[in-house]
Length: 416
Image (tube, rainbow, N blue to C red; front, side):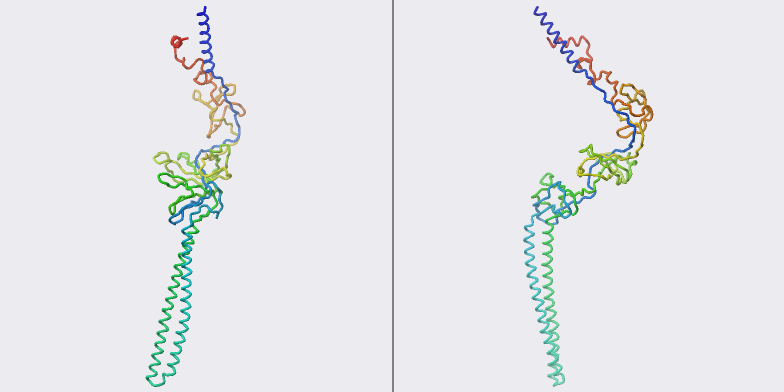
């Protein structure tokens, strides 16, 4: 009696497990549908690219050795023209400027002294020359010997006047040269000191560039010692934003300047921006090094950008080829091919042949067969009757393809 009870329990467990698994693998689902639309049909060409600023400026390290960054404007912050962006350590330049200013002061003092000496000596030599001329005029009619002495004194006074003034003038010029040299050094020191605070030449957003640090690249930061002329910060002007996109050479002939563009950002796919094709490259280039695919570069101006549009963001562009009104259209996935003709499935799963026309990246034009307002299936509803794995299975997948004997043998090996 116990054996009969045990057998009945095992039979119930096996049957319950079988039908339980069968219920799990039997999928019931609703076929998604959509309404057939009648309205504007947009023919467009897809292009993808990266957002960038139309105008940007790269701030580089000044041509000064021994630089060290002491302050940076926060990355991502927006600066106006003239706002400070980078500051460097100015200890050495401040000391050099002080020294050169002292040297300039001494040189100016020497120059003033040389000018005063020139003025004094010029007056004294002029007076001596006048005395010699008067003495000669008084004695030129006297005894020949006295007249000759007076003449020699006059000639000596004339030579002395010329020689000493030339020497004094040379001293003044030398002093002026020393002043100019000292002034040049002061100017250089002041210019270097001014260069240690770099201001924004245009309004824009602060974007740090990467530097080689040891054996790797990393963004610039306070404390770094860049090389003279090294790029440190990029300032894109956010007033005018563009998308640097590419299109294949096959589709490039369809795109021209002035065409309207619908722009979406990958980060904000629900936000749509208006754009316009600004220019297209005249020559194709390789898409990537070593690639055999040729592409054309296309610049798209974003006309109504907002604060969400930032340089470096990925963007998708739909370049509008044409706009056609009153067109019956359905999504691409609603049209199927059966026996060489295009068909759709109505909401009641009725198959209907249609004549298709132009298509874009999302929809296809229906020339005949639909008038608009109907609802059509977005997947083939006949798949429901084909017992496809994952769609509808009437028995466990482990038993598919096995004979009844193999199934019973498998159960027997598993035991009660």
